[in-house]
Image (cartoon, rainbow, N blue to C red):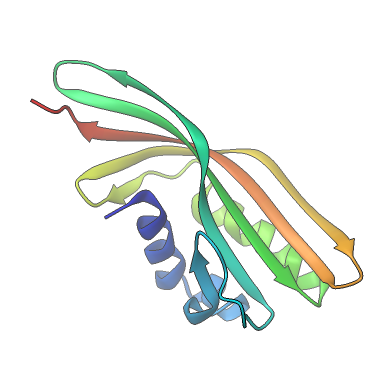
Length: 132
């Protein structure tokens, strides 16, 4: 299971997040061409750094959560819920473990006349078993 999938599963398991945007409208990497608002995208940003020891590998990965909505209140509520569900949390990610998610940026903007965007970028420390 990838880190993006693990984050999606946490979203899917949280009733407050799913009340704002149901899991069927949460996409991995890119939204479908016919996505209906509100919808969200979970993506891994380029530029992971890794540190290896004999027993474990620690990676620093950037994850971006982005949502589009017609309602600015929903966009602000999403930032609050992302903070509650993901900020400074540890959770399993398949054969790995997310040790910590720390927000680097969180904002709500109106990029153009097409609605509101909630965006957050997290630095995630992931522990994986070291390869033999």
